[in-house]
Length: 361
Ligand code: PMP
Picture (cartoon, rainbow, N blue to C red):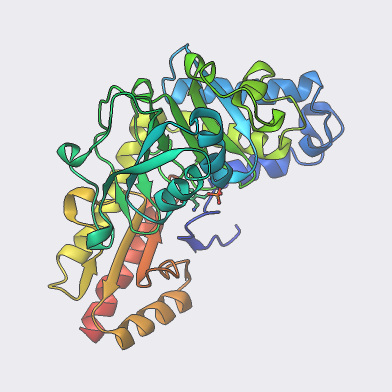
């Protein structure tokens, strides 16, 4: 039995042990081919089956309607920050960006290179401790699109209900895709780097409405057009085949444990363990996010007093809790508890937090 770490990394992050074991089993001889998945031609029927199965599983798990394309791209979610305005924003057009953290700021910055993006709402004033109320949003019906970040990995906030708007809605779901059911039909485009809930880094999933792709600007580089990838089943050029294989196996795992409803239920239970400790600590721990904006993926908090916080982080490390230091831009502590982080890891961490307060509080 290998000893697995309590992995609270923000991404790349924990993968299901079952998936790693299956990949290990199949590593040298993938399903009788006499080679690993990495060595298969991306034009072979063996690889094509892997590729299409991953798409089908994602479609099933997220109930993605027929009129959407699923794309597997490269360049991370960060390339989507540029590809979206490059495809969908014309120089004279406007697009609203809802600013809820560093990643939405980065997306907003890229859009300025292509058209006239503006702040449709921002919660920067309170150091991004909350998601705006739906009535705080200001956007125009004739905008090219409205962009939001569904889960703010660094600040630990998450949308609980998405706005129903009459402009194309675009969502960066990098850090909470597949963590709970989502009404895909509210969005014209959803994107996510795989390295949190979906698999290893190197694959970016894009879910995009077919009629939205048709609206895209034409005069852009071939590789940066969504239509190139949609028209070629994401096989226009060599895709990241091993990453897509792993993604497919992570999706199989999600199906095997009961699908998206079960995944969501587990995530809620895991998050509750940690938020309960924070709430019952009499101010020894303080959560960064306002309660109704709390993320079920990234639990961000501070420990009372800078010295004690340092001690907390050091002891957490000694006890085998990996990745608990907050992002360098905000400090504090953060436990990222994505789908593949087991309940037992969250339980152990919650006990550690209680014990630390008992000794030091
Ligand atoms: N958006 C969000 C919400 C993220 O958390 C991240 C990465 N942590 C990114 C975008 C950037 O992703 P990538 O590193 O895949 O470019």
